[in-house]
Length: 166
Image 1: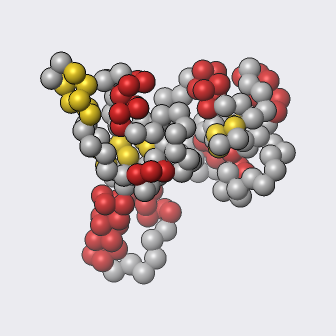
Image 2: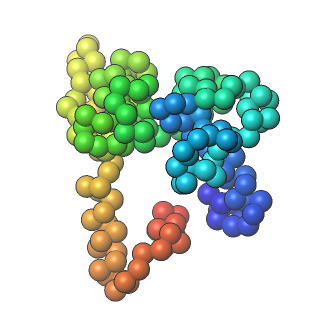
């Protein structure tokens, strides 16, 4: 995202501001104890939280209501949490929500992709809810083939970014 915005410090800050990282204990904010180093750049400033009408440790539901996101990525590996459209954690028992839960809460007009396989869901009236599996099974063979064909010994973030842009 930052690269597409100019690949400089301002672009990085602008891109970073678009992400709201919520873990099992709530929205990650400055001063969070035992924060994952990869999540640290996304910790929210407390003053900014006040402007958004959010409190320290706000729940996923609170953040969604205040921020009104376009995309939710379920990457918590905590089963039984609120549904996300892209429930990518696996194995199946660790998925953020099931296909059935997603359809029951969000209705039948959704796209659901997961990191684990789910059986189709009968939505009634002859309609079936389908799951699209979008994980290692589809991603890694392509990366592997590209690496083999290019003869590369290293796959950089830039290479993955260039492939995504194409």
